[in-house]
Image (tube, rainbow, N blue to C red; front, side):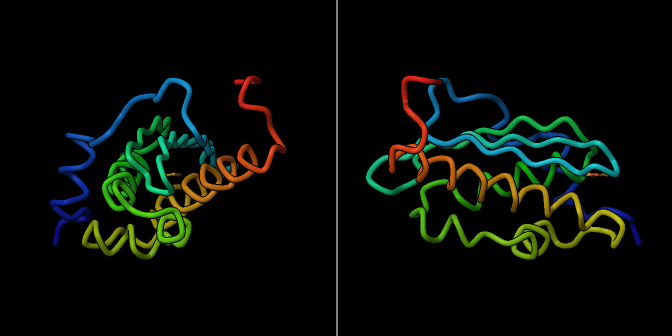
Length: 132
Ligand code: FES
């Protein structure tokens, strides 16, 4: 059996939603100290819905595939659902990851949750919109 599913290879070779959103409403970053990979998620939020999402990932193929799949899973979804995205959901949507690559999907969960938190922090006034 191949180490990586066809979906992982597809999202690695043709990542969806790669890039940056200028003046994003929420930005989240997650990294893994062991492998050194870093993932950044940008959210555009309108009326409580994620209307656009982009990612930048400096990391392995599984991290790129996980970011790509995570963006697909949260695009068009309300924030309360987005906040509950789990690495398990990302892994399942990719038809699985090898055990030693599951931590790559954790980055996607953490980066998405950090971006939602960043949005709520800004809305609550903890961080000024004008600072970014
Ligand atoms: Fe660390 Fe993939 S090897 S994120």
